[in-house]
Length: 377
Image (cartoon, rainbow, N blue to C red; front, side, top):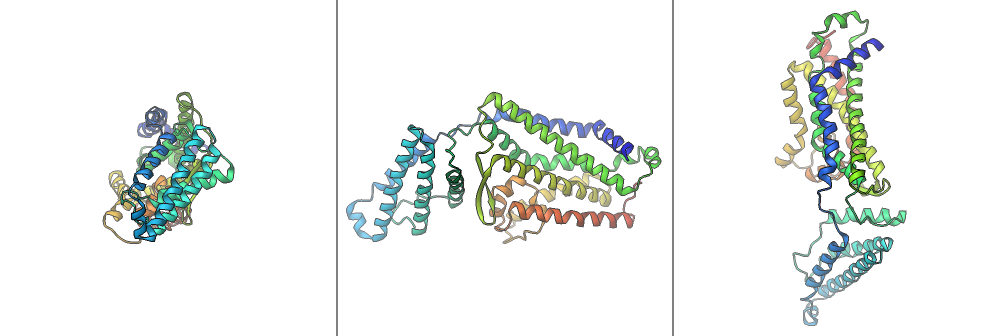
């Protein structure tokens, strides 16, 4: 078994396409910090100044005669005045570096905005509107910071954020196609090494498990190395930041915040599960089609399946379709649930569906082999 493992490992490493894809992944993580540092820094002070100006402009039409027209206008006026006071306090908190108090005031400010959405902001300009999803994300962030007694982060350009962002971008597109391209012809080289393979007293399925194990190990190892390189390069260009600072992600119960290190572990565990599913599914595709190009085409269709469903405006798509969960970042930020109007689609549901589906795909592999659709041994 060890001899075969060494043989397959060397075969993987000496494959120019595999080596190129691994090197491209490492290059992506190495160069990403240089692009990340070019992003415009989000200055809290400027954001709050803009919010204060907006509220002042909205308050201008609220004269005593205007307020007398409708009691709902007075309710909106009181809400906006309270908002203005809290924003002014937040500006003072930034100036005096009292960032824990900034969080307290931000939490209260969002509660006022939620109340205003419920009441309808009667009499206010239609331009004065809040995205409820953004408010929920922000409130989850403030709740975590408040409970952990942590200050707000005034600088978003940190090494930790660069590393997290690199995983999000990589997982949105590159990861799936790296795995698909590496696994699309898993057994193509077996015919060239038939004499060696026949000399090893191993069953087909032991060989299959070894191939899959080596492939997943190599891909995940390259990602881990890439992430470490990304953080190292980012640390030289930016301030480090904190791994305990919260990141907001979507669940069926609403938005919640967890430390960055936990968020990174979620993404990596998602990569592992999706990687396993794609490799085994790609192997089945190669058994059925015997052409890597058809395999790549079908795999690409599966990846863009959620976008196709969204364009067709199919309401309430089932959350038990594993092909919907190939983009880990879109699951974590709630984009998938919003796109397909099914708010049961969160990370835990998606990964559970994929884990349950893996044995089913493997069963199809067993069926394909027994039916003689493709034979390698």
